[in-house]
Image 1 (cartoon, helix red, strand yellow):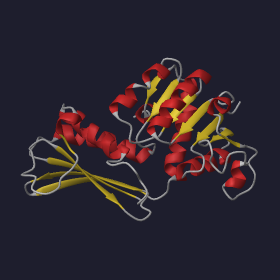
Image 2 (cartoon, rainbow, N blue to C red):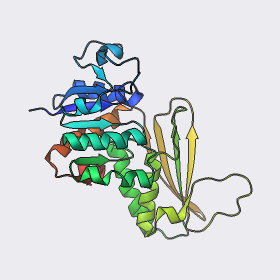
Image 3 (cartoon, one colour):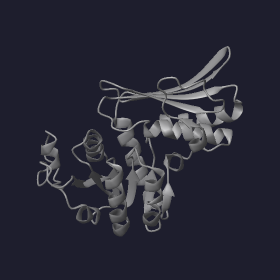
Image 4 (cartoon, rainbow, N blue to C red):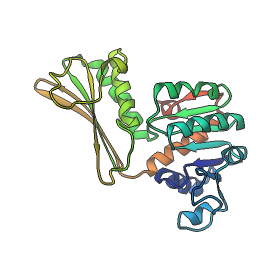
Length: 267
């Protein structure tokens, strides 16, 4: 039996891409689409709301009712909404795939009770390429000493509301882990004015926002006389949707707990 999938934040860019991806899949089927109360899509067929053919799924603002019919929930929304959805998905014993970015450490810690009852798969980026880049970043950081300064440079579309991106933070965490330090102790996330010289061993972040950039991430290792640059460029949001669906399917066979895309991809 193909697992039923609910997509939250149905009207958003990622929400619509996820709906198209699930609807086109022969391994899962769409059983729900959730939007916030008062949204103009509530009560409409989600396919028609997206400007296409009907999909037989009505957009709702009652997430628990939708989750109760599903085996998985795919959630690219906002931190507070994701915490609410995590509790409801756990009640429904549905796999909760979280692509939401901008979550604080305290918010991430609040997912733990839900993970005791259901599978939670959370990642700042769902693409295979980015997760390979994370592993490469960790290995390169472990191989190079602090003579190499590390900078994470990311670029996204003008409407992205959080910075650094979730992917940039994943890469920073990987670099810190490779060096055996905590990112919180060495992160340099803002430079403006007379900042003084760069501190040895710090991991810097730079964020670019403009146009319709889907996602570009560079990890720069810079020393005197040489630079190493690891890079990933996303040109289509479909890679994130395909990764999220892969995670939802993989999670069907797992015990309750917290997982990430490294687990899903066997990296």
